[in-house]
Length: 78
Image (cartoon, rainbow, N blue to C red; front, side, top):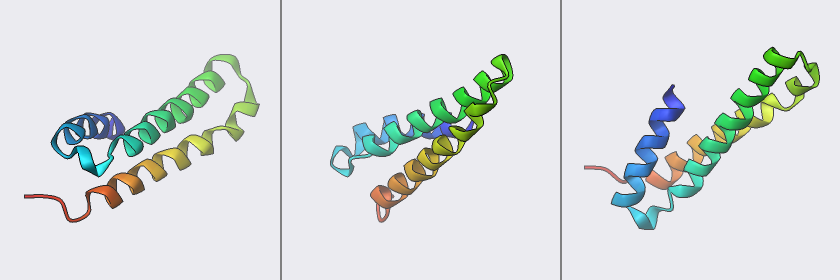
């Protein structure tokens, strides 16, 4: 839920601060959400336990996306 809100905020931020290169963090959040949630969903639907090894990669992408967004937006604000 929070990652979806963050993606909306990134879309807004890209139009407001194009020089900040927020798109990198946005793509990392999108990929992380897809890999993390997708692997868990496939595990639940198919019972393929090996998908559990892929789930942490999605988590790392999410953490990396938040880190990039934090780094790129540091010092920006009202």
